Length: 378
Image 1 (cartoon, helix red, strand yellow):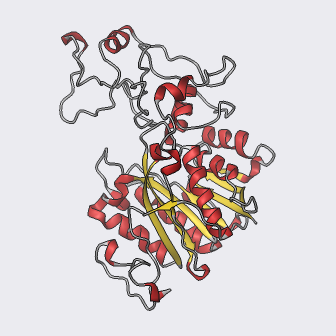
Image 2 (tube, rainbow, N blue to C red):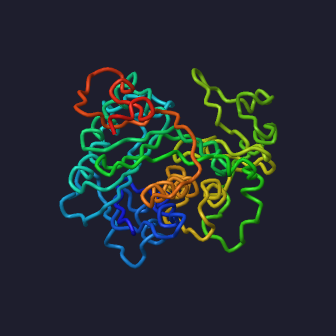
Image 3 (spheres, rainbow, N blue to C red):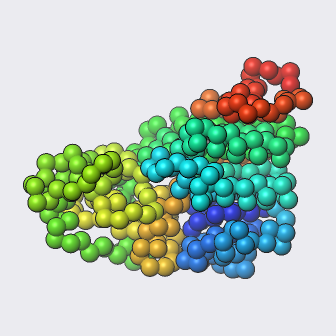
């Protein structure tokens, strides 16, 4: 069976690339692109070039608020990495009350219309804390009421062979009448993989013909500052001469002018921010190129990003690591194929429908049950 995948907030295609690479163990279950939406033209151009060059009309560039959901093609699988701005730990955490937080509801509208067999929703770890947990509760409740068993988990992608400490909450939803239990894919098979920044960027070397590999012009003061920052250090814990120190009051973000440590995975690659947030090489006094950043996000070197250098930087930073997405999609496909695979306990309870359940306004964990504790409800 091949699932037809629709996407909202598709980004440059990290989720889609992982999806179309994924196959069930027996090779009988797979995923193909059906349609996608994002508001940014460069992002959509990148998606089209790499995911669906033969069908550019399947990618709709517009604000999701203006998207005609009724005109979209039929799908039986759905993915949406709804904007994380109002859920991130770096910020005010306005949650669903912020400018971007309520956009998850457009994903619910798609779920309501198409009733896909399964969906995947992705956001930052701060999602569970925004609005003192009320935002997460609201989102889970909306998904639950559409008739889905929910399997949320806090994924640490470096545990799955991604050379980057990127942590995200991902919710897998499966239609309740299917009675399928998705299990979190095990991290054990990836423990011996070299996820160091050095290995990611140098093994093999980036081909000289690779796109998006232009060097960033560094100012003299930035180069001199980086010369005093050791691998793994940032602008605030390095021993900098007074003239090179940053005059920052209040919170000091640890990633500012932070240099990679060659023997450790990269810190989180971000898609926005001013000076000092570009990710910096451990040996050379410079920011990484976009191709190097893409490697940390596990995109193939053949994956071409379109747009200005700053636009490409944003696209790469906002993407889901391809390898991490592929692993999760393969677990979903194996679940539908009825095939065993190595799994581990989830960091959050499976949120399963209980007969005659009455949802309350209490914390989200009180609204659902664990299968292992009350199997009779299945």
